[in-house]
Image (tube, rainbow, N blue to C red; front, side):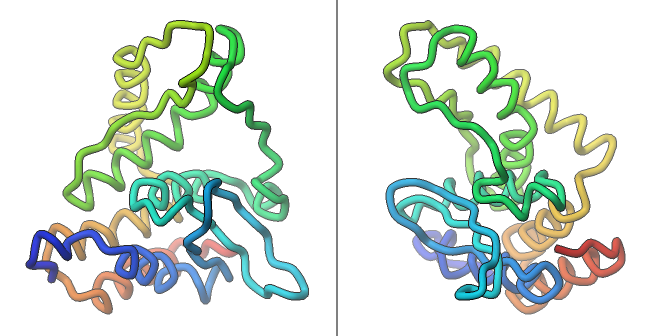
Length: 193
């Protein structure tokens, strides 16, 4: 159980929860990275897949986990899941495509963030763009998708992680208990890497 507010959201805890639930069955680990997040599939040199989050930010870890929870089996064999990414400075059409691609992962991130007892903030991620971004409209779309996930069910890996987070941060389980609950749910759905 997490008790001290200063120690409530540590990187060690989020990495232990993710690795505890997914390292064995999905051969995937959560890794603290540098400036940019990245997903790397396993190689001969690194025998496990890596969900690499940026700069040690807790929110970045949850966001990158969200992408991993949605990516299909074939995409998880490609670096960064084979997705495109345009940096800041997108035009209106590019920004719309970005937002459409981000609704589902940010909806999962919102649920993960809430399970941790934190406040979620959408990311429109276009600081230098020439187009005005309607953050509130995007937040509503993300929130509606999160509600749909709750009503219809989360993807299996996302559900296992959500349960582990809720058990640890909301229900007072130890790390070991929360991991066991997430792993049991994962095994019950027979999800594999």
